[in-house]
Amino acid sequence: MSVIPPIDLTEQFRAIQSDVNAAVAEVLASGQYINGPAVATFAQAFGNYVGSEHCIVCNSGTDALYLALRALNIGPGDEVITSPFTFIATAEAISAAGATPVFVDIDPDTFNLDVAKLEAAIGDRTRAIMPVHLFGRPVDMGPVMDLAARYDLTVIEDCAQATGAKWMEQQVGRIGTIGCFSFFPTKNLGGCGDGGALTTNDDSLAATARMLQEHGSRIKYHHEAIGINSRLDSVQAAILAIKLRHLDTWNQQREQVAERYHRLLAPVNEVIRPLPVTFGRSVWNQYTLRLPQATADNQERNQVQQLMREAGVVCMVYYPLPLHLQPVYRHLGYQPGDLPQTEAVAHQVLSLPMFPELGEAAQLQVVQTLKNALTQVGLKAAQYC
Ligand SMILES: Cc1ncc(COP(=O)(O)O)c(C=O)c1O
Image (spheres, rainbow, N blue to C red):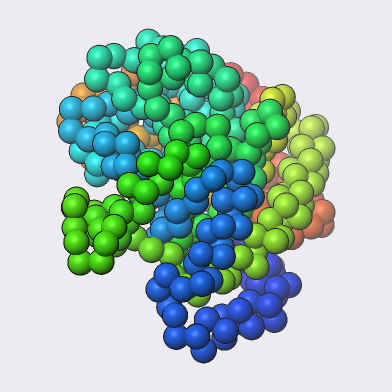
């Protein structure tokens, strides 16, 4: 039985293998493994792609978020508003900087922050809003930027899952004060290891972020702050520079995969398909459905996932437990029921295999397998919270 994985990185590598091998060999021969010319070249190219004046490349998307917060001098006593429906790294960076995440419920139709609920969460200690463009889908940044201007807040975009996405005509990552990106291998622009970047048009923030990523140092062996060591390896930079040239094509292919799913799933009444974006462009890092919720903990969704796995189609659940209910955030005092849309969606979501090279035959198999599993489990088009 051939297995359809959630993402297959090998096919993409085969397509660019000779270029990658040559670029890696060049870096290895150069001996400049840290902060070499490959790093500067990629940082410049990525900054140009996003349309930002400065691009600081670093070790991961998590570090990019952390460096952004530290560069903004956000720390103990400060609050940062963000989504509870995201990877832990978003909130973890806020906590690592010493600040407190404040979670606002999501819009179940987009999986992103419900911008209508943002204002009520702003208080005396709020310093920033950190919208997450989840699954490749842009947050509606208009209301976010309006509120930020009205309350004098900074906006840090978490673009980890959305490289190439657009809000209106603008690339995400250049709308707020700082944009943070991840080059984790499964991202739209993924390296062959960890990597990240932050983008900004602010000269002073860029200089501070650079200082912080180099052990708090602007001049070698002179340290003005406690920083971290967070650099992108030259080898990764060289690989990412090659992959960046293909990013738009790969994102277009993802759009085609999403369109095919949309069409193939139209007759499957039991599921809610992701809505088209009306104010920009999604780059479909994930194609995530909502399944009916028959019981409070929706074991049926998990059964569907398990049956599909047994039939050779591996789907993922991003994310089964919202951040406000994670053990690590118990001290913040959130209770089940506080963010009802997020909590409901966490029981309903199922992400289908999604990668640029996924073909129609495989997608037909995914959809047929899903239909069989839904029938077996007995989930019917029913109530969604
Ligand atoms: C929304 C979001 N933010 C931040 C990160 C952190 O990125 P990295 O894994 O490169 O540290 C991720 C990675 O999965 C993510 O999905």
